[in-house]
Amino acid sequence: MTRILLSGCCGKMGRFVASAVASRKDCEIVAGIDIVDDSTLGFPVFSNYDEVQVKADVIIDFSNPSLLPAMLDYAVKTSTGVVLATTGLTDEQIKAVEDAGNTVPVFFSYNMSIGVSLLCELSKVAAKVLGNGFDVEIVEAHHNQKLDAPSGTAIMLGNAIKKEMPDAYFEYDRHSKREKRHTNEIGIHSVRGGTIVGEHEVIFAGNDEIVKLSHSARSRAIFANGAVNAAVFLKNKETGVYSMTDLVNE
Image (cartoon, rainbow, N blue to C red; front, side, top):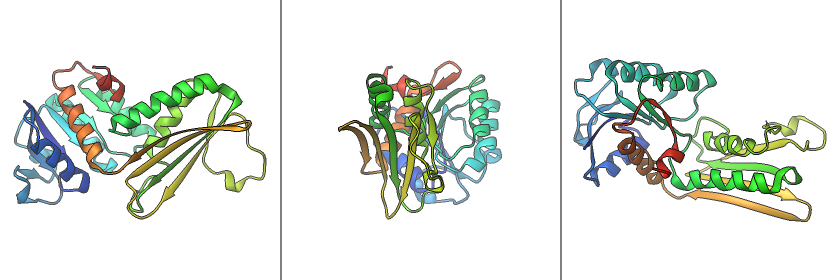
């Protein structure tokens, strides 16, 4: 049985995670972290990590980047694994996550969907086959409440493609320039509107032909299920930083 400490338990994603765990027999939520205390969740909710009075195997974090230092500090002090599902982290924060992986097992992915993980692998294959003969553009769309742009998933897709196109670079702001598109650009474009859960499309545009790869999330439940699968996967793992690729290949 994997014992889970759920950070951000009263938020939208936290509730999806709680629902996902409730339907399983291989894990349970022993406590939550949130500034809101909702007694209907069925487990104790603490306002910060200093108040936590139970021992968990893994933290699932769907909170806010500002809480990352406290969460990592608690994880290291208590030897608790971490499934980090919060987006919008800075490079400095990502470095802190990687450093924590030297002490505790950390599962870090910009997107917890298995389908998105597959999209990354397919995009790498396409980049390897099509090479510099095709222009690469990434378009992502999310709901109007999302704070960060571009999405972490778009960056993850771009980084996957760059492994096969090492000279490529990201272009976020083409409207301020009056010049032709450079061959090595990977354009990344963000759309925000309505209640779009998450749409990602990778476009390979060549001479007289276009190849498109895409993923459409229809419910946040897929991210919650992925995070719970990651938590069960992470229990008893050695220290290090793990990703969806490790989970899929388990």
